[in-house]
Length: 481
Image (tube, rainbow, N blue to C red; front, side, top):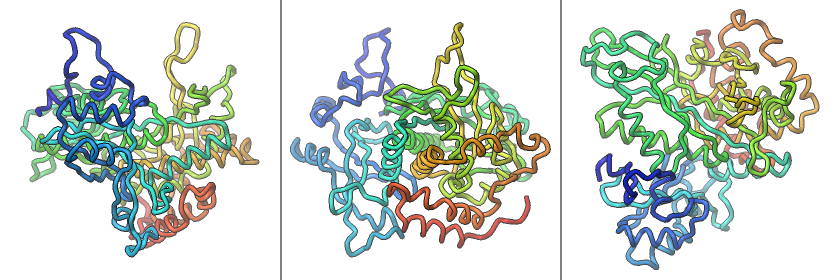
């Protein structure tokens, strides 16, 4: 299957408007209404040969277990019941004994898609994890983000939808044709001034084809020219996803990285998500936007008089209080501290503000109609995470932080004193003011917030213990940058 075939709406009448993933078009039903029968029928009618159970391991990356179903009964059994796997290998160091390590992959039918990269027609289905008792596996990132969302809805009556801004660098050998040969000036540049436009557009098509909601894509600020004696040139791009419930939003980030890696590999390019590729150049963030939701409807961030709504206050307060602890899941690389220290397109302090790009939390503007009504959901943007983030663990932590903001007795004081206009002027703040400068400092922040994370049995104590130990064991980066 070539790239065009993979991303094309097969079987569509000429000139028709086609929406949804390929499987939605083939079944004629939205993914939320799929049952096992729908997938079995497509498998047969479209002559699909393989079934892949895909899931997110402890490291935050996709894992795959492949099947060649012998008959309909075999296919149906796997789709309905899943299959066992070795939990001690998938989630090492988290208390799953190798002597009793069986866990189960549980397919989520609504996540199915046709793998556009497989050499044989393959249906992929994302899975959760269950323990030996059949209950959701506590050590699974998928379990944690779902438990956190359930707790948030139960205690506050609000859900959260989220979207990630997936930034990345692409590399190719310099051809000497110039392009936009100037440092960090590629924002919204178009071909021929950027070489990665075609790959980015193909990625948008592939993501739509597998059911990942996308808002838009564009070239970004970052550009790293050829170094003396070298051959490689790097340019930055971004794919901004669309709002989805927290578990689906986390899956979307993982799938986007997967698609980009597969496309770059096929094009003999390199793709890089490191927080900082080269000192002095723009870093790679993973800004996350959050929209409070009640009964499926997004809630405003600002009230009629411009004041913050209650749900926005809970979220902002929780992020300001616990955002540095969430660096354990959102800023996991040595260069994470370089990104924050050089303060290029990165937070400079633990504050929030309207449209303040140097703040930890930003409230971006939204498009409005002639009557002043927002035409898209208002969001709260968390600007601290970077390309090293584990999206499932990070989003679970944000939901936990919002619960903490909801219960806080000092929320008014916290909101007032952490507003960027109440803090020193942006230009007067030292880069990284109030932000951890080393893994040891992140570990200390995580220790102080661990009770919040463990609430509602969301984060297992063993998992937090291992995370703190790992952070403290890493080389300190506390020297000033």
